[in-house]
Length: 183
Image (cartoon, rainbow, N blue to C red):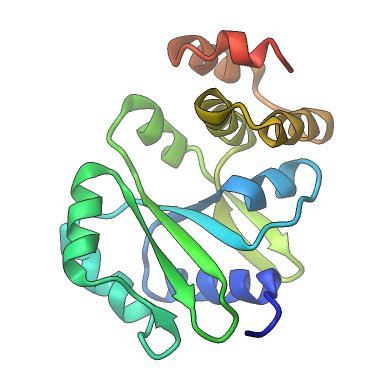
């Protein structure tokens, strides 16, 4: 297998999503690195806002000759429950985790607040707002207590201006205060 080139993978994924007119936002380690300190990763995390009628667009955008693409039924099932699936680029082995937008108040607000950001030289993409990246990382920390999430949050807070009022509101609403206190 070839060495993973996450930048090339990111360019390809963004191009395919935008060509297919699929509403998306980049989250996870890539988003954390954009706003905070760079961290190595071998996968891309993307939230998609779509319904079952949009499944063909995603399947057509990620050609099965270039990507492992799950069966249509998997997409429909995961979209309906706000779950996730993944794609794998055959040439590089890059894994793209596709998370389908949940219908919770925060998830809807988070997607509405996404921002167009230059993620690589000459490449703009939709990225979760820094406050929402922090909230997601607090949720992941609550689940597994991996210190990397707290480190990522500290990096974002040190490098990016955040809306403290918005952040405080959702930290409280989502019962994340004791985890945020560790920052």
